[in-house]
Image (tube, rainbow, N blue to C red; front, side, top):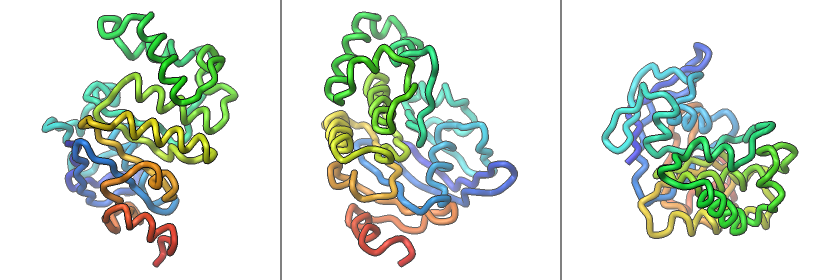
Amino acid sequence: MLSIKNLTVSAEEKEILHDITLDFNKGKVYAIMGINGSGKSSLVKTIMGNPIMHVNKGSLICDNVDITKLPTNKRAQKGIFLSPQSPIAIPGVTVQQLLRTAISRDTMTSKALTQKIKEVANQLKIPKELLSRSLNHNFSGGERKKMEVLQAAILNPQYVILDEIDTGVDVDALKIIANFLKAFIANTTKTLILITHYNRILSYLPVDEVIVMKDGTIAQKGNASLAKIIESEGYQK
């Protein structure tokens, strides 16, 4: 379980998250929703240990271990993966080179890694030529988001956090990503946390709990039907 206990966070000396308590259980899918500036991305950046985020109060517990003061790389080693809202380009580094740095050769040989990347890329319908190009350099929004999912699949974390994986993605790509994620977490104890503005990805990927944020707090929680209500009536109501 990934638990957030009474978390209050500041960035640039401004308090942006206020006394948040949440539990993300294993084997569940969560959607975090809310208008721009409601604190969604700030929350997951704090979970991942972004140094810009300063924890004033509260704690983060991952599988009964307090990770509040752990650096980002140690949190990743604990099994937490975050796909950012806007994946950056890394000139001169391919996705295989990046993953080779992250994965020990004792865990997977270079040959096995290459084969696994090709298999996942094929499932996500990522063009082969993108695998040998600099990561995300001149990639479309959809291609960048697929590459994030590919990295998650290879790294195989326990907690998969995807910040707006559906933004900048066309309908066909969205279906591919959602169906892949559904298969990826099926019959596992993985926890999937999606930040999204829209219900559309949730129509392909069943969600166990919807969490609505407003002004850096938890405004409401509910089941999948809450996302449908938001889609039809908006956040203000």
